[in-house]
Length: 486
Image (cartoon, helix red, strand yellow):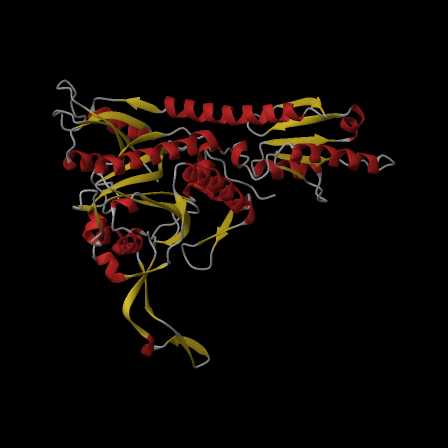
């Protein structure tokens, strides 16, 4: 089995080693692209299922919109096109021709208008909303899309930043600003529930500064998480778009009193980046640790087969245990490969399976199971028919993983009021630094230039004359989190 770099030696290399050796993903043939392998896709599917249920339960409907977007659509919203111009993949011709034992672009197939490969869908969705929205009776429109997007990236990293990735993007239209803001904040809470209740990852929620908000948004709210190298990862965002896209695409509606009114918008999304967060929050030098709620297999049974007259009865016992677990909706797999037990133990530790059940001849004779937890390595013995006991252990693993990550976040979040201290702390290590900020771009940029840390989110607005900005010493407007980030 391949060796994984230790976190303490090189956290970035550990991260990549873990992904490749745990069979989550591999590099695609085009620079910056990623192949999500079956184990990684199963993990993503479980995350997707949990989030999709919450999205649909909150009144949203799934739909699908084209991958190709006319370039002119992006030109309609100035801030949006400015924000995405450098990341867009552009289609200019419609076909190839065979030439000199190879292929070349047919110069006669040049498109009248270039096509943008979807980096995000606000523009094409609002072009459709114009057709669908005419009256107050048509509102709200609450759409979600599961799709792939393309954004050319200069510096890529598996799951965290790739030229193509999978995500969900929600797009809604509302009659009032109040409804749209309520939607924006409701989605942030849904994302918080996904991360904390399913991925066992503690979160901080706040508003982005103007320099960090989404291109075309009035306000952006984000979910910020802390990795084990104490860097921040923006794990999800929800945007209040105001009337920017409605105005750009001339979308209005007739109110009950027959007045023409503007339409208010939101958009929001999380991507396969959540898998990167899960890896970096929970993993260790042995590989992945996956919270039970999203684990592809929650229980792995490793038979230590006897080579004697008991083999048939032994295998029947293994199947009995596996069937009992599956009937209780516990995702279970029997590793019946020809590999040695030691290899199997290491393999499933690397893959982060929450529970490993070892069954040898002694367990068979005693009608017991040896249960090993991936999170702590603790081994216990339980009765073979104690399926509720297995579920209790899974629940405890889920809770313990969250508690461990929450303690780590708390221990490495510090409050400072001295700029010198901020610089010193960020030069010696990574931290989440809670401090006051005066709201100015100059103060924000000074921290970024001096320390490479950015304002991850605004936790709250301040109305206290005693509160002073950690950078300028002037009156503070916000309490924020400064941190280095992915």
